[in-house]
Length: 184
View (cartoon, one colour):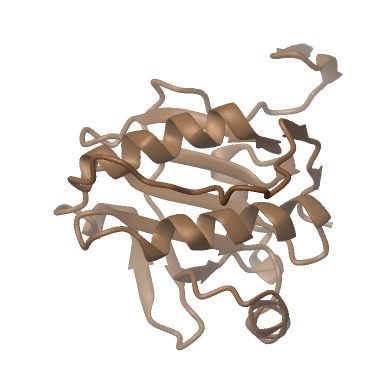
């Protein structure tokens, strides 16, 4: 059985990433301090943002820079979580190296990356914006500037911000950048 993925041709027996309109699977994942967080506990958050990443992925490194910038401008009614497929110690080094201050959860390899599997992650970064009814509103696989701008505008609006400047003048921003294979 082959599954057709948008824009990528036919891939044999690969579960595609969850699409817009799908109910986002609930999960419980630890942060670096060992506290568990779940999607179902974000009742006061209008549009949770989830980005799956690996520290070795150059596209993740650059996109998390902009996600970090986005998160720093949001209020408590918005939530940005990054979900690392790497161990907390490695991710801590990554955060220091790239000056990332995002809330991070960890999808443990020793358990088979259960949340990445539930969301159909094959490429990182993959980002989901989830609506109030816990359905996936937007999905972005790899880095797409237009997708990022659309998703961040929706999140800013939900947070009560009218305008959110994410890109500085003179900054070179790729329109698209391929991501890396996940879970390896």
